[in-house]
Amino acid sequence: MLADYLPILVLFVIALGIAAFVILLSSQLGPRKFTARKLAPYESGMEPIGPAQRRFGVKFYVVAMLFIVFDIEVIFLFPYALVFREMGLYGLSVMGFFLILLIVGFVYEWKKGALRWE
Amino acid sequence: MNILILLIQCLVLTLGVTTGFAYLTLFERRVLARLQNRVGPNRAGPAGVLQPVADAVKLFFKEDIIPSAADRWVYLIAPALAMIPAIIIWAVIPVGCWNIGGDYRACFDPALSGELNNVLQVADMNVAVLYLLAVTSVGVYGITLAGWASNNKYSMIGSIRSSAQLISYELALGLAVLGAVMIAGTLSMQEIVASQSGMWAMIPQFLGLVVFMVSATAEVVRAPFDLVEAEQELTGGYNTEYGSMKFALFFMAEYIKLIAVSAIAVTLFLGGWRFPGLETLGGIVAESSGPGMAAFVVGIVSLLSFLGKVAFFLFLAVWIRASWPRIRYDMLMDLGWKRLLPLGLVNVIMTAFVVVLIPNRWIHSILLFVLGIAILYATARYGQTVRPRSSIEFAPREPLPSTAVEQQSP
Image (cartoon, rainbow over all chains, first blue to last red; front, side):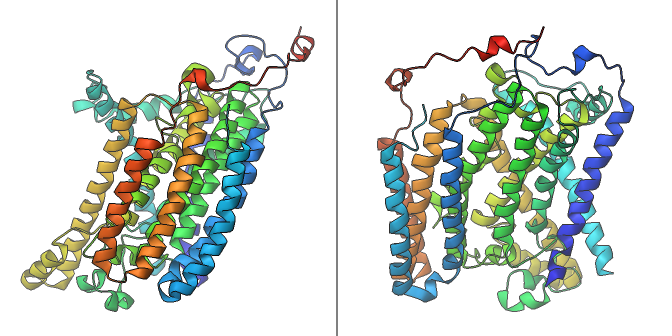
């Protein structure tokens, strides 16, 4: 079974090789006249003001949390998608219940404004 | 022997994909130029065919800087992290069907799938669809780390925007893929293609195809969803501090991913390498020149049919870029969470109900097609996300603390 994944390992090694080769080669070929100004972070020609890794909007964290919930839901639906023909009406009702719970949660967060971006 | 074939497959695939990327950039620039009433690059070689080579040489000889503020190792690894997933996605995609050393009929008859030895697919694994979803997610790391490691405000904002955009649209993408999996009833790419004999999955999954197309465009940050690299606001987005070939690797990752999602769309919804009359063609060749030749001809024609369908999607992507302005960030999030995600869910639920209640393949497919179009029409008619700017309510602004002035360097 693990042999099925050998091609991916080979392809991974080739891709890694290309990336490493390209980065190394371009670092050797180009001119190298570094000055402090040239290596400074780009900020439209100004002296950089403050650190760049600063606070950012809390909305992004909300998006990340909602993503985890729904991504797990999607992955959970995959096994059902493979057998739903055989499971028939029983499968429909069980998965319907599961989806209703999620949809209620989704509608709640929508109405609560968690998805509002302004 | 098998290892040798595998190595050749992997090398040819990588070469093909990178060449495809190089000529996609030329194709895009030429087509975009025509759509904007310009000529486009046509100086390097006849009709500009050497332009990608010239670009590569130029990029190799650019000065390769590492900004002094950057996190050196993460900064160096990030481009590779973005590029590797874009290439290894290709392992599971069947780009054609050349049953080497066997009968061409194994490509078409599921009963013969035991003797199928398709050299035009590197890895036929049984969880290919999950693999696709997993690998596309890994690509986010490269972009996020690139923005973080650059230690530049433009890069940072670009990468935060892009990671939020990518994870938002991944949900809709996953649900659209789920619809196709329900119709096929399998996670193996080869079997998904086989299940589309007689009818491509885009008929029962029309809604799924549309959701897939929109979210895939956002997933590969193409126009009109290219807010990550909005030049007017962010200079270059997450790759502002990257130059030389390190920049080219990001560029490469983006375009290879564009080709890859087009290939996935073709495989899941447009019958993959299938083409009407291919099996008949194989029969004719087998009668006149033997089974080996038939397998070869079927392989070549199926590859061409696959590439043709992918080219259609690529042209569509360029056309969309020429036609649509970039959308605003709140509209982007609205579209992903409030339109595509519910549409994807509706598609899955609708497919489950209709397929279980009406087992006949043709009847439920046509019914799903009609329902999909009706839902799309209703969404377009009553579910506009575009609001004029003045209707957005802004929260009252607190005055900013004056840290900015204190931290100014002398």
